[in-house]
Image (cartoon, rainbow, N blue to C red):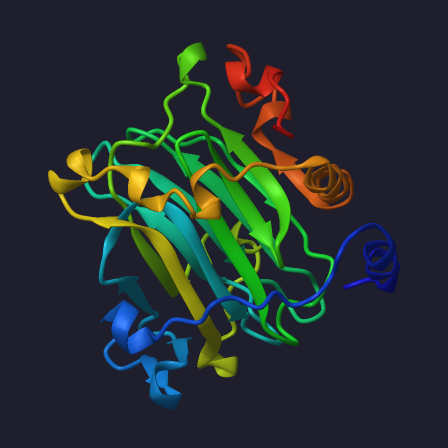
Length: 288
């Protein structure tokens, strides 16, 4: 259940409010790419809904590719019994050696919390998962989810509060996504073989269609495509906050609070999974 105690703590320790983002337009910014009509753009491009039934889910992708930027969307997740469903908001390149930055929201039975699953892939390799609960009910109202991606770090934010930082540790031999342009993708799909309690709880199709709602999309990045990305300089984005965005002292305190109270899985602490030893970046501070 969603507890009032964390909300009380949050009001004291963190700035907890819906974040106003500079709204784009879904007609202008994205294409619905699959779902046979289950994805719908509404209200003149201000809103978008994705639906899932036993036959298919649905999804959309950004028209542009980007090499670095800040990507925001407000999202209201499937309410009620969402078991078996996965709602996504992520960046990805193409190909076997693809890069990817993931927000995935794993549904649950009525009254039980969503799991927020994050991961980073570089050159086709992931295994960098961290999972969280949320300090609010993400089905009751819209909340803002953001990815900041620059050459130094990736920051995952919820209502502008950082929940995770993945820093560029190439100096330690850790690959970092920085050379392949990525599109934004969002989807709602059936993963009841693993999404809820390891697949033990299946989707209840009598509750279908399941619907997730998106609004206020904001794609503020270095839009480019193919070979042009290598030659397109970030110098033209000198005034963009995302270009060098990092955590200040307040942000580091927020991150510590979230990770202390709401993190439920950290690959850096899963020693049975990595008997050869945890990855080298796990020994560095995650609050940089």
